[in-house]
Length: 98
Image (tube, rainbow, N blue to C red; front, side, top):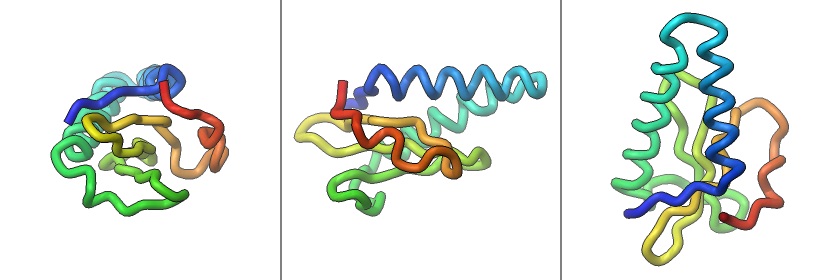
């Protein structure tokens, strides 16, 4: 399935990766790899991720405390947030998509 990121979601993922890169050499690349792994798992089988907040689902990263918050639309997955699992719960709820 095609994956489409809301602009804010992509930006927050990039910012998180940059932050990790400032903490330790190589950590930014590791974060980006885990992000891509989560995206691939989500796209391969989106229905296995449990619904919450109505139709929304989340796919957790391995190792890092992040998840992709997404919804399934007929021919695409819409990612609304690259969400830190412990910070600012629900901040992304006002996002409607692209």
